[in-house]
Image 1 (tube, rainbow, N blue to C red):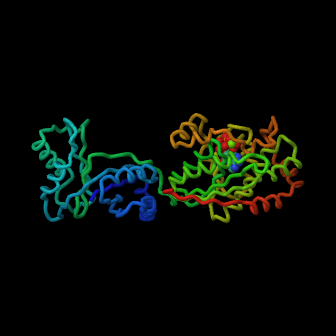
Image 2 (tube, rainbow, N blue to C red):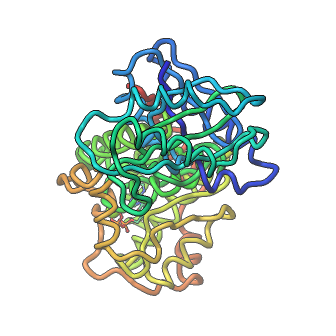
Image 3 (cartoon, rainbow, N blue to C red):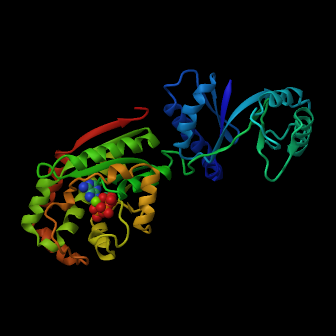
Length: 392
Ligand code: ATP
Ligand code: MG
């Protein structure tokens, strides 16, 4: 048997919730790896163990772990039996000596952690004894500060695990621990990054996209489908709501002066999103707004848009520069899709000089002349729903 030993950090800090966080992560890993046969995922004290029968499966497991939020680091490990009543390390020593990397190296160190404090030797004792054995048998030198190879040992109840690597995980919190949120996805650069950040903080993200059909092509919708597919690799299943918005926008255009249309579109999107969120039992809405980026994201307009819903609106990118957002979009590989040309529905009927400081009283007055309830109903009735699953 081979193992992946998975460590979490923030998760461990959650006191009495810890069990819940661990279970979410175990559940996530089981689902993500369900296509691989004979794999076992189990919570051990302070870590999660994935056991697998064939070495070549490591690559898939490694890929999965780099996309599993809550993981701080992980290693490819093997194990040797130990006993709590004896300090005999012979089997462990032999196993490590056999498996230590064969590539040329000069120096090494041993780092032991005891999850099982009843083991009769301290971590330092174990470091010293295994270190001395390896020096003697391999002729390599110990270097505690900059070794070529580190031997990681983790002592559990009946088993000691050893590994020669440690890889970083993505951090964050396990999917599902942050409840469900509904993200307004536009197909641009920002909203997929906003969704990613919320998934990383443990939320399960449901998506809604407002498209311009029948007035615009399908391009923005297809981009959003690709982006949701990409993001599903982090949360394993997703739902995307597609709302036809062209006719609603046309009604707004007919009843509202040009400079405030964008704010009215946004308020209408929020109302429809709020209703979908209630149906989904989502606790918040998410947008890719970044303060001051465009006319709809000025302090005044953000206020007027937020006023329309009682749900919290999360804006994880609010304090980020475009350059920072772009760098993150490139890192998660959403950027290429986001910059494909499309026609976002917000470009439809948009005036050249939108009002950057809409007054709520003006907005409310104009909305009195619009059939808000009818538009909301129309949006909800015409919604299309698509489900996604990963592994694809
Ligand atoms: P993005 O890169 O996410 O498109 P942006 O900089 O283009 O953002 P806006 O077009 O003003 O900014 O949109 C701000 C936010 O409003 C988006 O991040 C998204 O959350 C939401 N939004 C805008 N258009 C749509 C749409 N057609 N469908 C769903 N949400 C939208
Ligand atoms: Mg946009």
